[in-house]
Length: 111
Image (tube, rainbow, N blue to C red; front, side):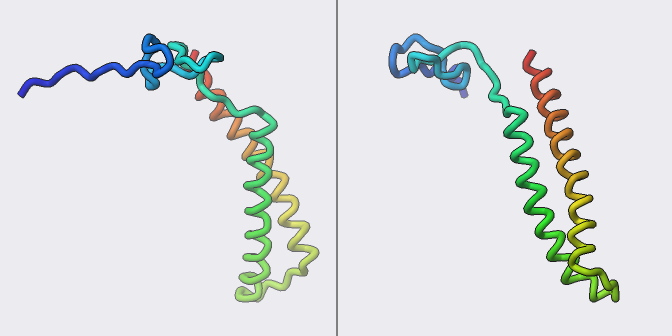
């Protein structure tokens, strides 16, 4: 059995650009040979982490309200909100810092 080398795809606009797997679209709609990794901004990292934590906060609060009585733990809704609020602040900071750490690791691999 003879294996043929894979055919190199070309840009449909000019037929000279490298294949899509080897480049990105440039300003003119042609493929560029330069690969630039996409990067999430710090603001979007914070928004993503905040949204994630807000959903987690609501889920945890509802879970605490449902589960604590099963263990004979009498905690008021106000206390549940305070506890959840303190842990939420810690969670937002943790999520944001981990996201930035992973972004820094990913970015260092592209240098």
